[in-house]
Amino acid sequence: MTAAADLVLTNAEVHTLGSPDETHEAVAVRDGEVVRVGRAFDVELLVGVETRVVDCEGRVVLPGFIDAHTHLPMVGRSLVHADLSTADSAAEAVELLRERAAEVERGDEVGGDGDKTDWVLGYGYDESTWDESRYLARDDLDEVSETAPVVAFREDLHTAGVNSVVLDRYADEMPDAGVRTAGRDAVSEGVGDGDAAGEPTGVVVEGAVDVLREATEPGREEMAALVRAAQSYATARGVTGVHDMVRGSRAPEVYRDLDEAGELDLRVRINYWSDHLDALREVGLRTNHGGGSHRDLVTVGAIKTFTDGSFGGRTAKLTEPYADAAGDPAAADDETGQWVVDPEELRELVADADESSYQLTAHAIGDAAIDAVLAAYEETDDPGSARHRVEHLELASDEAIERFAELGVVASVQPNFLKWADEGGLYDARLGERRLRTNRYRDLLDAGVDLAFGSDCMPLGPLLGVDLATDHPNPDQSLTVTEALRAYTSGAAYAGFDEDRLGTVAAGTAADLVVLDESPWETDSIRDVAVSMTVVDGRVVFERD
Image (cartoon, rainbow, N blue to C red; front, side):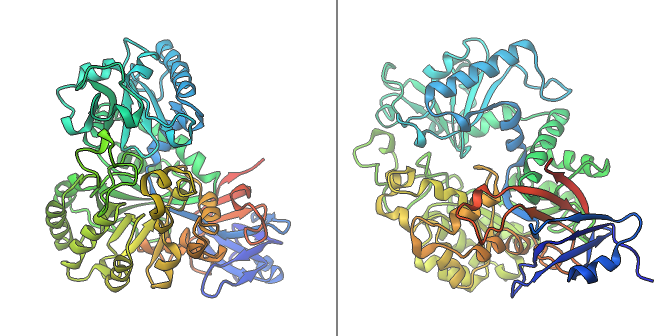
């Protein structure tokens, strides 16, 4: 006799998102695995005394969304520190930071260990949406506090603003190239006009931001609080798995703590920063360790590295100058951006990690950076089998797209970045007409490149990404709804060697599912479709009241 199901979703529109995408009425789950998909009558034969039966009332059931590029603790930080993504101006951002400063002064703690409670931290501001488009700087943040260290991280995490306390405390640790000064970039950033030439404006980029990250890194208990908050946010948006980019963090330890305690509600693939490579080798952890079955929630992923910076910070590395660089003191040192990791160092890292059978994934936004990563991957034996990845690849040339296809390199992209690509937006200012040659999803897919979608937490929200990818500022690059959903499901699963157990709804796959109130194929605003239920490994981890 066939064992009863634990969970049955019926009276639904179940999309397998396979090839082809088939539609069914119901799905049954047992022991964390999909055991039957088909007609409601057939599936309901598995209903037993203890089976939970959910009448979906015609709602859409899809494979759970996998965010292929996240920084989950950063989502948690925005939730528990000052969320600057809601600010419409520098003044509003300062006011949000003042509110957080009052909480810090009262001694409000994020976690039980009390770490970093003297810091006033804000995350996620985007000056490109403000009438006065400028970075937050020292003068702004001195208004928040003259005694406590204050940091406002830009949304891309490649740029931050700090107050005088931070500049005084970390002056000797921050690299000169990362600390912007008056006289060099006051004109473009709108800050520091009252400072003497050469004085720090409080705007820091790249290597100097790394110093701040290390200084504010949470302890174990605080990290657990951040992850709990972030996973609740993610599951409420239909996310069932994340590929988290981790550097110098307690997050891997916390993920395993939560998993052991039965409190982890997401599948987590940990992509470790390159400075962890020797430690991983020493303890014997390799790519895909911990991913042997659908019950495994924490898996070792790739070795992660940078090449360049960001368009927002004008540090993404281009072959041609930025459109807004001419005559700008801010760009005088290098009108084409900068290397965070230079091509020679990148080649050495890729060769070293690949020789030890690690998957590689490299941040590359500008066309020069993308070319450098592909050149490094070309020198490895079989980049396709290793599923080496490039993150972001926002300005890829025709030749680069052909090389992606030839090498079998995975394109891990973030469609929510398209919010900056409209006429008059950030990319228009930085790139001019090149804005319409960014994020070439149609060209990548048509060339046969494996496409994985993620958010980079800017913001975390798969349905927003699907909406933007299907309505690209350059219509020639738009995807169909099915193609975009696959990039957030089976495409992301492939990027993590998980296509056999995740990314589709079929008997034998992991029971990672999302139930949507409306069909994304039949709405004018996919981003506004509500998630009613999220299931991970057969457990209902989110259910809207």
